[in-house]
Amino acid sequence: MSYAGPSRASAASQRGTRSSATPGSGSSRASSTFDRTPSFITGRGGDTDWQEVALFGAGLALGVILGAGGALLTAPRTGAETRAALGARAARFRRTTARRSRNAWDELRDELHEAKRSLRNRKRRRQLEREE
Image (cartoon, rainbow, N blue to C red):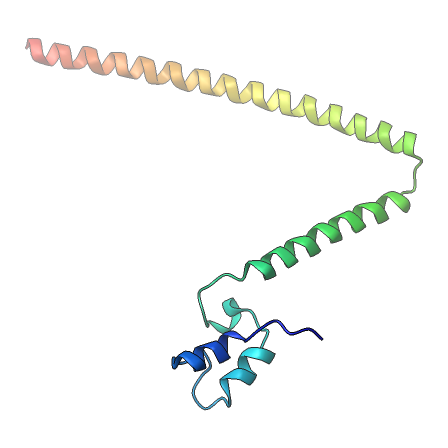
């Protein structure tokens, strides 16, 4: 076991400040050293422990890599069949997306024409009201 220096609680007690331990919970050193519950669960502290975030991210990335590797190793098709199936699925996705985007562009064009026409009509009405 290696020594990593004084804990936050012991450093706080040396400075004469109160630690984040709740009153009556025993020594502040024991509760901060052995209590590894994240602060967002306990409600204590507002500082982000970036080492814990990095460790979580590394674990998540490792899990994704191992899961993808396991899926590739246990796939029921050969590599060529899998690539062909993925290519067909990607082509189908491109076709449906292109159709949807064309429809969306058509709808946008129609909306803009409608807005332009209503703006033109509103300007005409204001002009007629001013002339009267």
